[in-house]
Length: 177
Image (tube, rainbow, N blue to C red):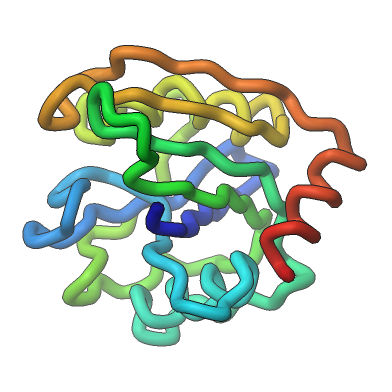
């Protein structure tokens, strides 16, 4: 199973979230709107990975600190009926850490602030409309499972469990060992 991370940067006072489009050659979400993130490297904690990925994908125009990060859980993504997760994605949010749009890069293009109620779900991965409201608007931490239709065309199954603060701390401690 591949481990990955994603962060959604918010302007909390205005209920905005920063998204950018993945480059056309992206393994799964090519030209789809998404948060910043990517695959974890061996030996990396999720917090280390999201800081590195954000720095790389914005060519240093967003500098995150571990204290900025709010862990919102993990979602396992399955490609169709496989019993093996293609990706286990650790979810983060951060509020009010940037004031200006980062530049477009080779990896993430056209960064743009979106109002929570106007997220471009039709141009995002199909599961985003299911879990993003939970973590962005409701502020929940979740453990979730998504089974995609073949070719990532839709969602065949989605389930989640809300995590308590002690469960979040335990989960994060387990993955940071």
